[in-house]
Length: 191
Image (cartoon, rainbow, N blue to C red; front, side, top):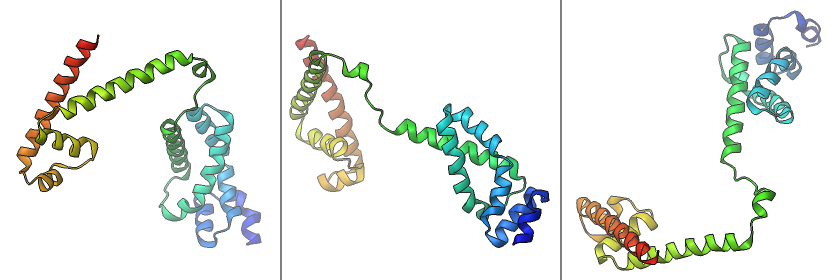
């Protein structure tokens, strides 16, 4: 093992990867990884646009590398590592995008009156929708309730209501149309 550490700087990427696969020596993997750390940092900085996030990503990519080098047949390490870094950054951006954002101070400074007005408007809309739903024909109301509110599929609704799938589909379509007409009609009267 000491022999490998002493000459590792003269070994090619492929030779270092092969040595790591045989011996699982992290210092060998670190040697080949260090050759491309600047490249990885640049890639991560390009995608993440933040120095700290880029530095964290470079460390996380090394941790991924420990297992992924063993799993994949790598023909050209530099290109493969570049793609790994790119994918890592894109996944990090997707996760960041899907996480709820913190409310900014500017938003918090909106008056309670504006906020309450929006809440009351939503509440009025929900009450109107509930009233219109109650006004539907029984079979349409049941189909709408099971499909939209309880998340049942056509086949499940057909089994529950003892109707065929085409009847269920028709009840949902007609109920949705009647619900929309009722809501629009009542909103015009309110305004």
